[in-house]
Image 1 (cartoon, helix red, strand yellow):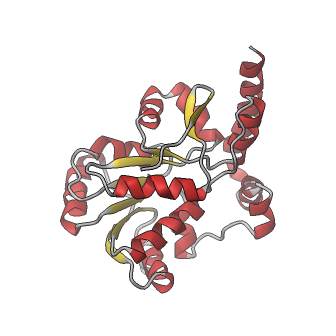
Image 2: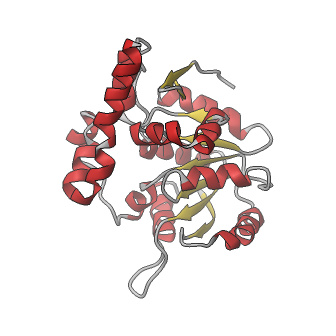
Amino acid sequence: MEDSKRIRILDVPVDMVNNQQAMEIFKGLMDKPGCDLIVTPNSEIIMNATKDQELKMLIEEAGLIIPDGIGLVYASKIIGLPLNERVTGVDFLSSILEYLDKNGKSIYLLGSKPANEERPSVAELAGENMLIKYPNLKIAGTHDGYFKKHEEADLVKEINESGADFLCAALGAPKQEKFIYEHRNEFINIRAGIGVGGSLDVWAGTVKRAPKFYQEHGLEWLYRFIQEPSRYKRMAQLPLFMVKVIAKGKK
């Protein structure tokens, strides 16, 4: 398995990897026993990790920490250890699906909204669309993200009985990362799990991804804010993050 150099942003580790390097590490995780966590931090997650010791600990122990947010790229330049590029969670998930498709591996899709009278669950819709692009992909099972804490044991049992090799959890950060980390030693076949936030919604077609212009300029956050002005409190984390990075850099 390829090793990566880890830098620390606000004392939270991040791997210095591009998409290809991240995939080599991912393949190594899939070839070894146990379940490893893959984290896709942005500036908001880094900020939360500075206040949430459990979150910081699981990031420290993650098998792969890809630099998702553009804020991390800017921050890495400020501290003098520039990241080559960011690896967005949604693009990395596509690379994972391609690998699973080519290697006969299976995936369990967990998270987002349940089914209603008008449509199947978001996870089911996402799975259907994944199969259109990756026809040899094995969808071992799906489950929505609306479950109680006391139902987690049954959910883990369901995931194990599905025989899935990989877990994709879209429960929102940091719930998705904490779920994988908490149950990592209970999974039988799962070799790695990733928290993907809203990526299942994108695959399901219930949420549109930012247009190419926004993607290429690292402005997905601005597109999301335009679409959902109620996110302003979360968006405020980015400038605060940069201020903290600059202040820490001067010290």
